[in-house]
Image (tube, rainbow, N blue to C red; front, side, top):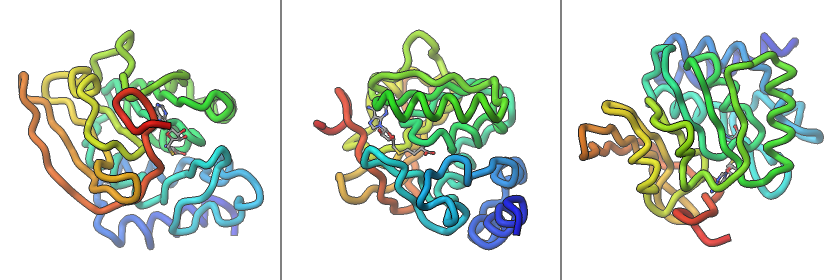
Amino acid sequence: MNWQELAEKMVQTQIAARGITDERVLEAMRRVPRHLFVPEPHRNEAYADYPLPIGHGQTISQPFIVALMCSLLGLQGDEKVLEVGTGSGYQAAVLAHLAREVHTIERIPALAEQAAQRLAELGLENVHVHIGDGSLGLPKEAPFEGILIAAAAPRVPQPLLEQLNEGGRLVAPVGSRGWQVLERWTRRGNSWERETYDSVAFVPLIGEHGWEG
Ligand code: SAH
């Protein structure tokens, strides 16, 4: 099977079958070559239904969780979006097909550099990779219509809530270091509406508004 067939099968059996209906999200998941974001020796499992190690003790999220978080952002295509926790760069590549401009921030420089190189090789010029503590957000690029935290937070960092536009949405796994619940926060003036979704297990968000390293 070539990778397009594997991606199509992944979309049908893992994502559409579990209720993700946003056609733009399904199409983005078909278009990104996930195997290019998974280092050896796990590359042959790139389209499987689970997270995989990417080095430095970090993981690339399960495809379904990537799709679910993207669909909860409800992107139409004209948004400026922030991702916290670049990791392999895979989720940023999916977001690049869903939004106008994507900023992604990673605290481990080696991961950020590899991700930036992969994204550039794929010609995804609307993604910008930054190195730093994303629990503080990215004030110089704020505000954002969407923020996605791809690491587990003890609580949603206040600076990130402040960096949302009116009506903007933030999606994050919130809970303990071991397990979390996906939360979506929507900005309404100076208050935020919170909804909760699936249980998940992410690596920790390490930083000033996250866990201690
Ligand atoms: N979205 C990634 C998976 C992220 S794994 C992908 O598609 O591959 C979570 C990542 O968050 C890890 O790479 C980890 O180093 C990073 N991270 C943890 N705390 C962070 C922080 N405060 N700021 C930026 N990145 C952080």
